[in-house]
Image (cartoon, rainbow, N blue to C red; front, side, top):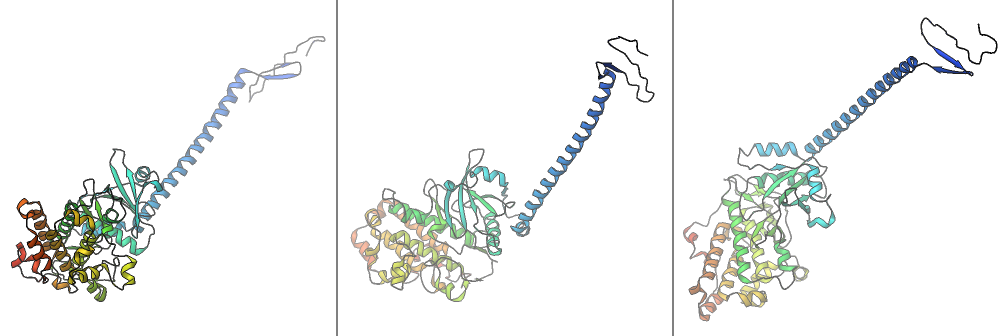
Length: 433
């Protein structure tokens, strides 16, 4: 009991279960230190439990997100032809070189998220971007515009073809990425654009001298000869044109774009397929029969030779209006002895007439309307190399004007230009006949 007049009253309350001590001062109740400690323990326990639950929930969510991303990448891999690509590469029996598998993150960073300022070129096969890898290497990343079954087949086909090829005048495939929505291919970077740009889009200060054009022609011929004769299974490029010929820092030629190329059996004479290619370069026999042979590539190369000689565009509207192609116009000009009327002025200034005439005859023989009468790419490569060697030889370069006139006015039959070549004694029958 409290005494009257006492200012502060202490009440000791024993609670058997709680054992709580309180001080009542001026109508307020304070919890003793032992009680505070107990409360903190309870709060800490609840907080730890909630934190653990939140951590588990976050980890589960992250796991699901990663799993979903991996599933999406796996779906992209399958949809982009990854399984077909593996099957095709495994069927090559070790004849392929290893290509690096790039991650989408690597290529996004390399191309600055495929910035438009990085575009090197655009075409029917897709868009090519310039990329820079962490080690400083510059690459070219090819990104298809759309994804459909045909484009995926072309993507897989290009990887398989280029994985079997190792030639200084064929663009080098570094690798690819299949985990993105649209498949990506990664090539070595070729700095000087395409032969088409070099001939038709550049400014006049760019050197287009005869010696350089002749070297480019010889390099392209050598690369096509390699594809036809020197790989395990012959390869038909099927889209030889100036936009698919790249020029490196020393203006050396490199053939690119193997999306519609075909590997064939050694004893196979042709492939029957729907007509694909570019107007102005198409073999007329292939266009009529849908049968593509090695001589179809020869015809397309002949058009490229004419392009180098005349600096005219095969797909120009001029030829359509005249119901002709650059190839037919060129052949008619030769038949009418008007060749030097259509030869590019810079070639006339820097080249010798006899050399120009010899190359013109190579082009005309490549453009023979009958495929079996065309030379092989191996014969073409040897002949162009012979002309190059002759051009660099001082004694041959001093041939007089009368000899040049004789060559210029001579009526050539389809195989005349090879009469002095290594292949003059070979039978003209090839696999494509």
